[in-house]
Image (cartoon, rainbow, N blue to C red; front, side, top):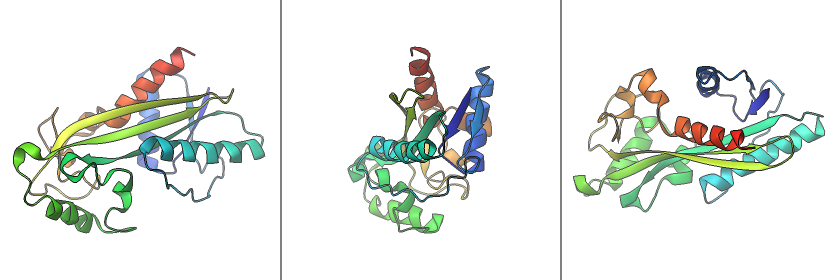
Length: 201
């Protein structure tokens, strides 16, 4: 079985491949580069579900025009902070402007929360996956990682909000987690949910 995963990000692609391999599923994962899809998809939805579906539909249309009929999976993910009414949410990647440095993005969020007490610094990472099957049926799955926002950033690099998001499960900021621990987050939870729904088809 082949699956087109809506990304050209090598790290994300490897994470997806590892997931299916670890679940002993014989699946070939194709990236957008593999099918020569290089169009910029405008993500203007108000929810992760809307953005994920927009991406899936755009890739499906491209595949239809090029005689490709495989399962398509896309995702949209972001950080939702309760004290900020769910922001940055769907704007997580451009919260401080397009291509803003990690430090600028983090400092903006921490500054907005400078007067928020510890007990109200709750937040969650959300990942929504959308699959369009060969018969055009659409399946949606959602995964969450709950936690809170630190008052001072931890190690920089890796995930954009990784230095300031403390996972409830592990009690550390995301950037301090091991590669193995990072697998058990919102994307994996969404993948597990998606797999359950696919198995019922």
